[in-house]
Amino acid sequence: MAFIVVLDEQLKEKLVPACKYQRFMKESVCIVVGLADVKTSSRWAVVDTTIALEHIVLQATELGYGTC
Image 1: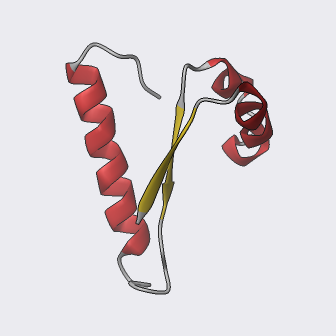
Image 2: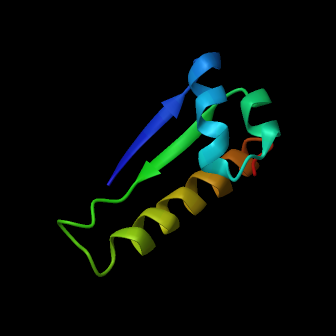
């Protein structure tokens, strides 16, 4: 599992198609990308990554940041 914080405006624009063309994504301050390594834990990798991302959302909300 790994996370990448994307701040670069051009890279955020390139991520829009991966976000089902939700154009507002490129307007965000940052995008946190979660990467699941299905080779090391094919059964639970995606679930574990999703849980970790949800914890990031909960902490951001606690700090007063907007999340999506």
